[in-house]
Length: 183
Image (cartoon, rainbow, N blue to C red; front, side, top):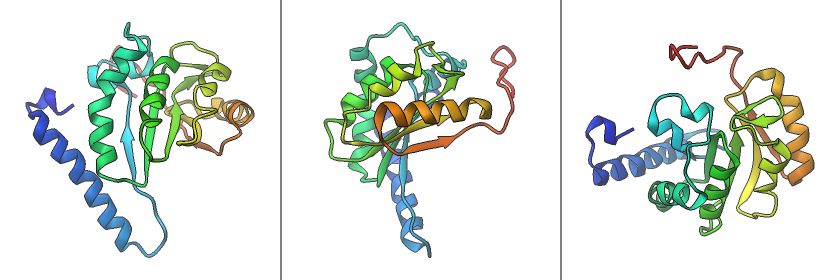
């Protein structure tokens, strides 16, 4: 992330706000309707060792919420159309994020990264999607960064558990090799 590149917190916040501003300018100039989604990825991506594909970081829901809160507040203040809570590998992390989104008046979607009928952390998708079922700010649920073969079952589960629209953006078929850090 920014810190690993030596970028101070205030400058990182400015860059995140600026990214939303630039996307909104492009949206406003577009000839077709478009949304600006501010991406809120998993804690594991900051670790940069592939943990976003595994989850189970050894942190509590409260600790995950404390880590995500500053970034979520910066992005929310930049006023995107929607927050994309994406590539979430663990329902505990989803619970932390959904709780934070519940504090703000901004729509969000929640998208898990999965392996078969479970989150990457091993939780059943029924339990994972239930985290978002009764949260009005979560306007859609789904999966991303997963095998295309896992999508149909996940879509059915997401729809059945939440009744919300489902969003899907799987990988193109490659498999991540965490040991060598290549697709």
